[in-house]
Image 1 (cartoon, helix red, strand yellow):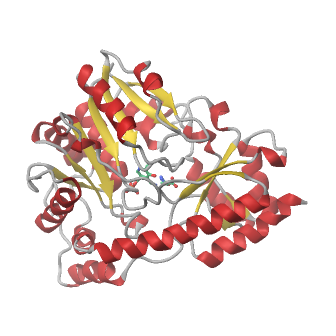
Image 2 (cartoon, helix red, strand yellow):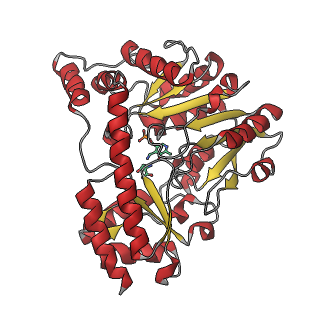
Length: 383
Ligand code: PMP
Ligand code: GLN
């Protein structure tokens, strides 16, 4: 074994494993969350044009001016918080790098970080890299509400960061005002920071997305993260960002400059063009995802799953126990190999694997024909 000890216990990501399994069995891949359709031409054209005109050298460390400006303008129009593009916005290589830069830049060894689970699997890895200790608060079916009492039980004087994700992958929960206020109250009481991952902010079918930075006393202690990949169907571009007041931005940049230094220049030009999109673009995106959600949710229900219809994101969690498998991993293997549909076993998103064993996650960022074909194959479970 040559791998450094800090990675002990992490292994290969579930996304790599399931994508390979899907390929090996020719399964319809509703596993890893990436669209099987392309991003919009106006975004790709802007990146291609930048590449052709020679914008191919290192970008400014914290983002090209046009993109920082577009991120600040969109954040302000969403939140009514005035943001300075040069001192409060940092462009990163995906939200994943923004997470790493935020934790390495703002968290000290020995600090505690509260993670809401099920979690995006890079959260515990970032916390470990920063030398901090993770404390977990679990969202439970059927509503996956963030219970204030559960949160209060793990937030304390050693808490440096409460890390939230809304709309939430994989449960689809969109935190309401009461949930956000519970986080804010505890963060203020214990002088903790909040890191808010909002990459699915434009995919909300029920309820309303609210950035926690808009709550009283929260802007000064919040790092808000997002990225281009989900809202513009270009997950492979890995362009993300962090918005935070100067003292927190300084920490994010301290790490970002040594992690990647800067993000791919032509793709930043594409991102700047993307963020100039108006309401029409987002309305059409949402309408299309709502149809996909309803199509898959109804299909899964008809097959016999207990479906937890998501308020947001492009994922559906379902309870697979009607089909008699002992856990999510054996069910996911059966689905890929015998049924021809790949899905993610969510136990990978819990610190106690048993908490995810009854569940399976399907991604619906796929063409409607693909989703129909998947539902068709899933009928095999009924026999
Ligand atoms: N946060 C969440 C909750 C995600 O689901 C994902 C990716 N699917 C990311 C962050 C990573 O975003 P990016 O691809 O921009 O790194
Ligand atoms: N977050 C994406 C998902 O949940 C996957 C990202 C990745 O592969 N790291 O599907």
